[in-house]
Image (cartoon, rainbow, N blue to C red):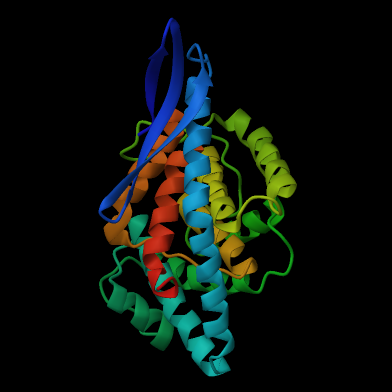
Length: 295
């Protein structure tokens, strides 16, 4: 947490913001002078200060992950690469679907997607959407163009065309709510303008913002717009991995077991309108997932 500190020197009062960082057993304090009075935009200053600290801490780690991942991948036989991708696709499909309420277990998902064995007494909708998600995942890996609204609509249509034809590939025309969250997505009339603004922002910043940070921001901003009646989380996670894959970083899966922290970070970012909350959560999650490339 960033704290405001006051220092009095003679008759003058000076204000600073301070943040403590734990490095193993050591705690390091960072501070920044903000003036003789607390600025009105202090929350923005705090967020930017925290962002600078996290960039300094994590960006070198992420570059090391990318470098070592790339070296490992280049040394692998093609069949081994294909197997690794297959394993990730199954786990990613299982977790992303499970987060959204699918009843399929990991074993059932694997048997379905790898062996074509349909699980008994499980919703047909879950089975079809799992198969469609894997198909779209591979479509995403082979997509040569960059992200666009047309691309996202196509991916959404392919996931839901076999289960929810009335919403497949269509921007919602009604108000929606997020189960278990106090965050209320934008009204229907706001969705298209927000999507245009989102893709304009993406095109402007895609080559300047660090890729993992961009992946986190794309996920956060898109799911906040919530343009579909269903599938917003799934599309956001696909978009996140599209960016990581396109820029040469290992893709990220968010396990169903970790959904509480994931949901909490998203909601806090949305409610407080502070992107850095979710970005920092994803930074930590990514570094933890790929710590083997840092050692």
